[in-house]
Length: 178
Ligand SMILES: Cc1cc2nc3c(=O)[nH]c(=O)nc-3n(C[C@H](O)[C@H](O)[C@H](O)COP(=O)(O)O)c2cc1C
Image (cartoon, rainbow, N blue to C red):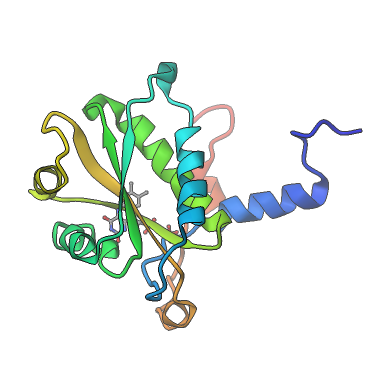
């Protein structure tokens, strides 16, 4: 019998497709995200590994539409129409790699819950303003957030198609040497 960690061929194909197809979703319906989905997403974030297992980050879950609107004004535009934003609060600038990793995992977990998400960053005075508004200590870094909501499929279908979504493989991967 296969060990549990090994996927069947079908599951492997599905999982690779799932990973490959994670897209930034900025178009949301007005439907709220359930507590159950938020808990599941946060649990994936909590278990994301960090350098030296230092676990430098915490997440502030924001569902208040006034605050989401402020995030949008402060440069993280996808927060405006989102049902929730998960603001990642980290120890300092040196934990940016861990921050990126947890952001990606939160986005993947949202997709697994059938939700759309977008990683977005607060810009200019945004991080300081958000810290002040949400009582986050000033020495902490709070720049990246993951917006979450139910995907507005009709609005997404109406978007213009990107000419080429990604560079070709031969410009991405170099074998044995650059
Ligand atoms: C680190 C990072 C920061 C991002 N910041 C923003 C942002 O501030 N606003 C935004 O609308 N999208 C943001 N995005 C989404 C990217 O623009 C998007 O992932 C990229 O254009 C590729 O599109 P796709 O994810 O749909 O393939 C960010 C993505 C990443 C990974």
